[in-house]
Image 1 (tube, rainbow, N blue to C red):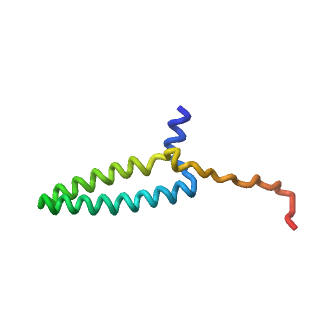
Image 2 (cartoon, rainbow, N blue to C red; image 1 turned 180 degrees about the vertical axis):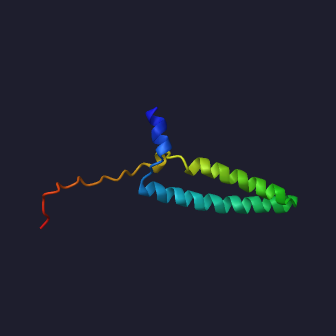
Length: 88
């Protein structure tokens, strides 16, 4: 049950966010070009949009869940300082 709650929470680190953005950008450009070329070759706008839609769904399955590859560089935060201490 705990693994499901962690999966649903969706936390990824900063490097994971950068990787997800890079994967999304490259994948969408490639999917757009491939969908256009196949749709143009078959002279079918419907085929173009179906291929592109399937590509977007596959991309969402790759990028949206917090896979372990997006959590390799965990951020270590500083401990909070006590309220009464002064910084000089």
